[in-house]
Image (cartoon, rainbow, N blue to C red; front, side):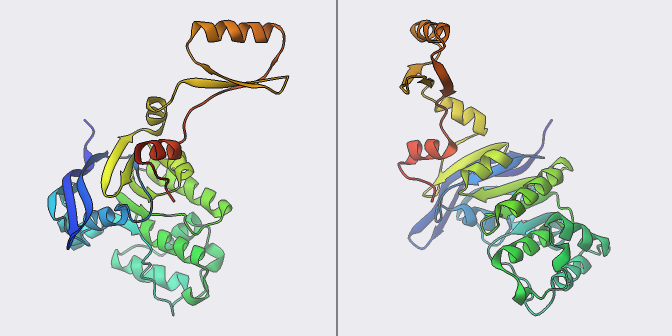
Length: 284
């Protein structure tokens, strides 16, 4: 039986008169990469702060690794998760290596853990640079190295590749998949739909503090598809036909017999299309 790494039931979070999260419920299974998708201000970071004991929910239940989320601030639980957020917390006057060694000492990690983490984020050549010399993207990669160097059971990533170029983004994706294959459960927030499709087993769409839909990307795309296809002909014409339709099959057979078809593609929606359909707004 698969055990749940995170269980959230009817969570609400208010700040004065503003409600950041409204009746949010979801479960993340052990070993899953789960995407929490939504635009800035939708409540994604608030959810991470609740799950990592930086905030306490106003109502509802949140359990992480079998204990109430608020208990994740305890030392024995802190060692079980890693986190990457906008707030890096790096010591700017120290070098990259010195920052990671300090963190490693907290968990009695061998020096080899620093080397492994730097290779993970493609920063081995920058180990002697001071944090003040780093670009925003490099700082983000150092923070990610720190988050994964103790090989946590659970990893929280808040917009993990927002400041990265495509080459380093691909490198990080490869590393995250490897970490996940080793057993780490990953909770990922992003507004990048391509990132969600590349990495996530399941996603939840968050809009104005409420979950609008939840499921595997492939299942969501199937559920919200209009089940049509676009056929491009040698004449330059494009025709949209319903799929699984007898008349469409006859038309396609006729075009194929005369060699008139250049391309056929299914009109499957993107995750961004689905979010727009559900909320009337995009993810930017």
